[in-house]
Amino acid sequence: MTNSKMTKIKKKTLMFILLFLTTYQPSHLCFAAFQDMGWGARPLGMGGAFVAISDDVNASWWNPAGLDQLESREAGFMYAKPYMGLEGLDWGLLYLSYAHPVKQNRVGVFGINLTSFKTGSLYQESTFSFSYAWRMGRTLHGGANIKYLYHRYNWDEGMKALDDPVVNSGSSRGNLSIDLGALYRPGRTAWGLSLKNINQPDVGLYYKDLVPRELRAGVAHHIGDVRAMEDVVVAFDASYRNQAWAKENRITLFLGAESWFRFHTIGLRAGMNLSGLRPNE
Image (tube, rainbow, N blue to C red; front, side, top):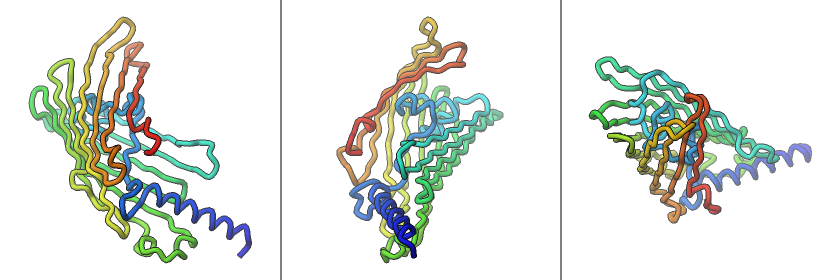
């Protein structure tokens, strides 16, 4: 075997080890799989403060109850490449969603959602969800997701040579997860509640690796039109994730605002969240 080929294998093995340290751990000292990357350009533009708004196709991910506010079919798409330009780092985020209202006889709104996170050819993490939202009252909405979580490692010869029990047990694992959501909007102010991964599915390859349960609550106030600004809204969310690692970071706060211009053809959003300010996350 040539020196250049050996160097390439060693480099790829090192990248796998670094990936392990950030995405997998038997003792939950670092991060687990299926961290919330944040999906959808509009919610991300508001810093993630969206659980009490959830009035478009992105609701299927953030709060499925909000899908019941839709009056017509909607589709959403997002693709991003974080840290572009850094040598040897090839990340990709893909997000697809679709919502279909069935208002006859108040059946409700159905939705499907696909997210995919890839680190080049090393690791892939995907979530496919089926959503349903229904009217619980004149101003109260309910919703649920059934999700399939799947992740896969591409072991190279260097990793296989380590004779690690995780590597020897296979390269992929999938499991089902359940979300529930509620949205109450009696007037200009709305309250939202979302509970993700209620059953805490195990996605570990060899050791147990439970996807943490997450509770998120939020409030949004719809101010309305202010001069040239249309449908101004401000929102605040708080989430609690029962992760077994970094316990001091279980609670995260989100703040966001949105305004439209030119008859809803141009949107302006601003937001921030506590997780983006934590250097140890």
